[in-house]
Image 1 (cartoon, helix red, strand yellow):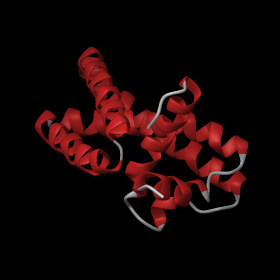
Image 2 (spheres, rainbow, N blue to C red; image 1 turned 180 degrees about the vertical axis):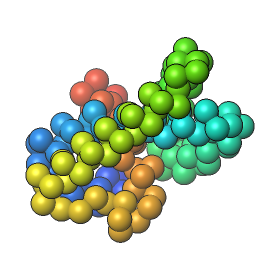
Image 3 (tube, rainbow, N blue to C red; image 1 turned 30 degrees about the vertical axis):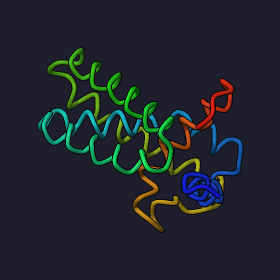
Image 4 (tube, rainbow, N blue to C red; image 1 turned 180 degrees about the horizontal axis):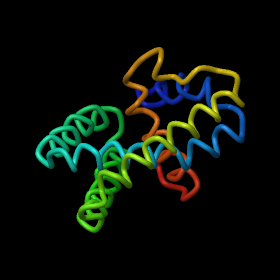
Length: 141
C-alpha cells in the first residue's frame, strides 16, 4: 500500500458515515481556507512558509495530489487579496463555522476526529477531500 493510501485508510476509519463525509467535503476546505486566511492576515511570509511545509508533506506521498493542493492553495491565496480589510473577520467566522460543522459530523459518526490521534491528519484531511474529487473526475492520485 502506498503511503498516501495508508493515510487515507486510517483517516477513513472515522469518516464512514455519509453525512459526516458530506460535512467534511464542505468544512475541511473551509477550515483550510480560513486557517490560511488568518495566517495571511497576520503575515503573508509565514503563510508561504506554511504552504511550502505542507507541500513537503504531500509531494513524497503523491505528486498529483501535491500539485492539486498547491493549485487550490494558490486559488485560496488569490481570494485573500480580494477580501482586503475584511479577511480577518471573514476567516475567523469561517474557521469557527468549519470546526462546528466538523464536530457535528463526528458526533453523527460517533468517532473522534483523526487529528486528535495524530496532528498530521490536519494535512491529510484536505488531501482526502481532493482525492475524492480526483476519483469523481477519473484522475489518478
